[in-house]
Length: 297
Ligand code: NAP
Image 1 (tube, rainbow, N blue to C red):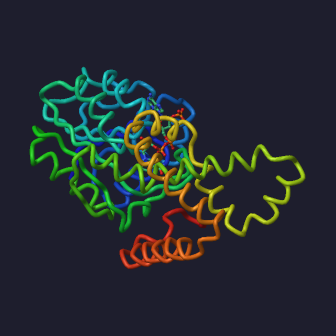
Image 2 (image 1 turned 180 degrees about the vertical axis):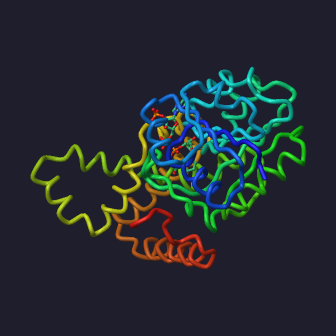
């Protein structure tokens, strides 16, 4: 049992974790630290934490586990703010969607008496804020840990045990590899969705109205992804630049090949690609990762 867990950033992920921790009685005290007074008030109104404050240093005082659940671009700044108040032997972890830049930004601020276990739960929805969270978000999902060479095994075990108790399965990965894998599985699809929906947004009014009316034919699924939090996604692209640009280059070449196949009437190429992609979908269903995590989807 954790004595005190402090969650910094009480949005979708932070509040879902708090709910799962509370439901499973994994900590005696849950403390919320968030730079928004409105979020702190909402957290107390919803009884998601025992205390809530905008003073992040106060929020982590006495905590044995501190979870950074802020946008990846804010992790370094938060680490700097809380560094002087971290207890001897405290474990710091995060939930950021990019790992290498978060490690680079956080580690210089952490004192030697704390351990850092970078983590990323592969679960989420397009919604944000403390009201959007739910305890079952991590059920059956993967949580990837990217520990550093000097991260003590007991700290990795403690963070793994927390995620497992919240319903997740654990995988350990090198941070750079994590960032490459996520660039293709998450970051590129979001970029494509943002781009397609923005193309529709800039069409003439009458065409735009028809796009919305007939959205069930495919467009609708892109709009769900493209409704994801703008700040969170801005930070992801700025912090995973190298991997995203490399995957984007590959994608552009494959797209150009499809464009050419359509132009020259190469049905064989189109059918070959579309058959391969169907097999990927079947593999995702077999791996039990096909059902959406979001409520009401
Ligand atoms: P969110 O719902 O927008 O919540 C983030 C919270 O952090 C907000 O309450 C925000 O307050 C607060 N915050 C922002 N900057 C802060 C700072 N400097 N100090 C203190 N609090 C701060 O975001 P989320 O979806 O939970 O994402 C949080 C993290 O989880 C991100 O690193 C993201 O990459 C990762 N993640 C997200 C998903 C997903 O699908 N959403 C999945 C896996 C991992 P304000 O609203 O006032 O800015």
